[in-house]
Image (cartoon, rainbow, N blue to C red):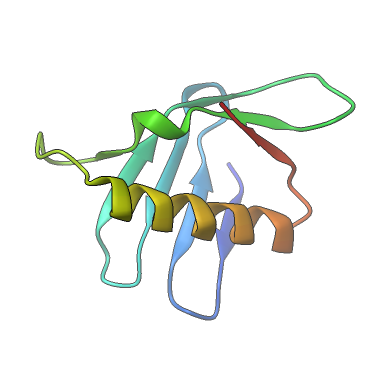
Length: 86
């Protein structure tokens, strides 16, 4: 499974058919539902509204979700991995 790392200290693990795990700069882990696709336009479908803490039932706020999506988009773009948000 590919892992994309930034020099900020955060990273992203592509879980293939079952989503993404995003690790922020503080080591907090988030799960984002998604799936590999066969498309000429993108490699992975990301369901942005599904962002959750991996090890907690606590709700993730909209501001944090928006920040995570920006960072996930940056990590993917830096690694030539095309995503589409849904």
